[in-house]
Image (cartoon, rainbow, N blue to C red; front, side):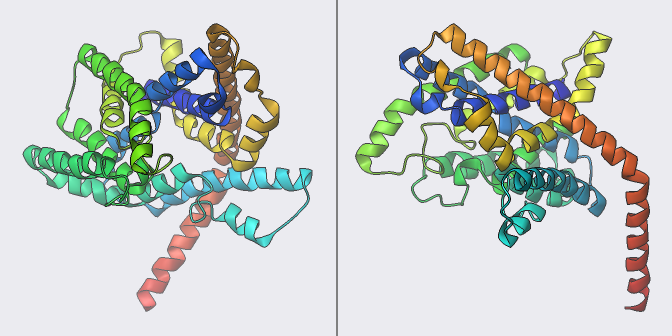
Amino acid sequence: GIELLRIVAMLMIIGLHYLLFGGPLFHAKELNLNLAWLLEAFFFVAVNCYVLISGYFLVMKKEFHMKRVLSLWLQVVFYTVIFYVMHLYLHPAFHWKDFFHVILPVRYEAYWFVTAYFGLYFISPFLANFAHSMTRHQYLRFLIISTLLFSFYSFFRPESDPFKMQGGYSTLWFIILFFWGGYIRLWDFLVPKERALMIYVISCILTFLSSWPVHWLLKMEGFKVGKFGLNGFYNYNSPTVWMASLALFFIFYKIEIGNRWIRKTVLWMGPLTFGVYLIHMNQHVAKELWGHWIHVSHMYSGSPELFLGHMLITVLGIFIVCILIDWSRLKLFQFFAPLSNMIWESLVGKLKFLEKWA
């Protein structure tokens, strides 16, 4: 069920990018504009869910292994380098600044999500040890206090952003989500699916309804509206998005897939979803994807059915193509795995040798 949620979350993330970079959120007409913002509300939970899933799994890994961190970094660099080389081939103009951005994607925020997630991933073993050290009562109090501080209080103080939450676009918010995922795993916390579905729908509708009155009030008061300001409740750390994220997690939690073929397909796709993000959101790919290859503007004033159909086909198409690309990347990594393991073991051996003489 969790791997299925990982797939659904990535489909939602592509949907968010369709609505944002394709332009419907700002340029669609009448009914399609409201439909775009409604879909945005239901999809906005996807990033939080992806981090909750990570917390659910990573909370059981209490030992720090540099090899795991390097593996994540290598996957990111693989795509930044490949697409940069392709970009240079089409647009020959080499700059050292661009080169350093490519080989240091976390440092230079080639992807905001990767930078925030890398920070979480790097310290996750220490967070896991902290999670295991608490009693259930201590853990629950910690979650309540941290959520009140970094979701509710920070969200309702966007003009000052007291804890530098940046609307949830930060490692700090990912850490809070990590602990929620960890609590579910360690203490088998469960919300019935029917109740979770009701919470999800109500929370998303409240997010949708919040947009116009809050925007109007904030503009009247002169507050910032937009990214890292208060977009209604359209922020990752907003109370409604946080509740909807947990609710969607519980909708999929412990789902048993009976069909063997579907189960195998889900288990195959799940680990490849991160690559889907790295591919379609690479700066060079995204520029071509939404600027030249996919034309969403034709849907701005069309029928809602046509708009939804175009969105569905586009999202599924991007997902399938990226899954196949990342599967090829995985096969390539597996082919070179013996060589990389040998290099890693040699490096570790030399470091241990130096420690003896230090």
